[in-house]
Length: 286
Image (cartoon, rainbow, N blue to C red; front, side):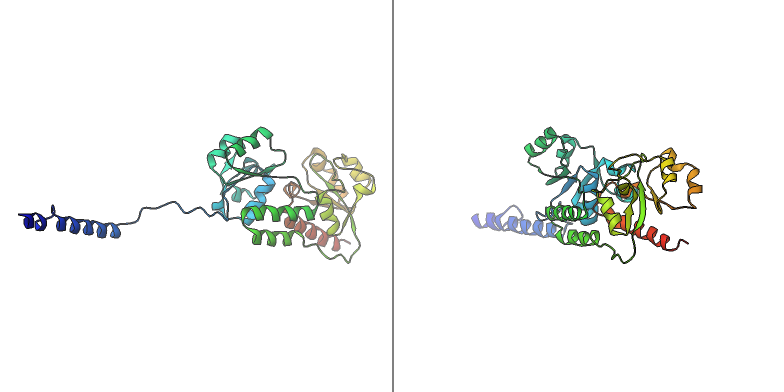
């Protein structure tokens, strides 16, 4: 009787072992359930709350590492990222609740991030790193390296920093130029764009006339004191006035994309390329 109980069908000991073996074999043949990818601690998941930091991130980190960019990068008036690129990423309005819901490992923000928001993020266990606005090319390259280090992408950051720092060797006399920014204002000499212009062979007529950061220059003033090159980076009435057409006899009037003025980082090589193209046009002037 005991033997019968041991040796009988699937309900017995041997039958149960056989059934278990079959089930394991079937399980091995079944498609594996998709599991979430393991978290890579060396490359933290990031949310950015600043458009200039957004621009760095999309250059140095793959999209899967960047959970969200700031909503500014979807706005052409403040973005330094092509619209098609910005659309590939999620965005956040910057509230603590939105950011915490994304569950990032690291949040990148401006030094002007409100303290209550910063405190809420830190209480939720998120790392927060804040950055200022670089006022020189060296500061911008250093910022790129630091963002890349935090993202675990130092090699990509170093490559971008090298591109940022590639100034043209100057063997020709400097060309007088006026950068006419949005609102008909000029840039001060202690700004990143002013340094970039000097590196690319331009000397500011604004500085020569004692004008400082954000001083306004009217159309009449531009025509009365024409530089060799007028870089028009705005859309104010004076910057679109037909009178500028007549002024082209006395100076090169060249459009300059305002998006090249918003940030440093990866916009610097693009601004360099534009300035070099304009300088080449100067060389063709009679």
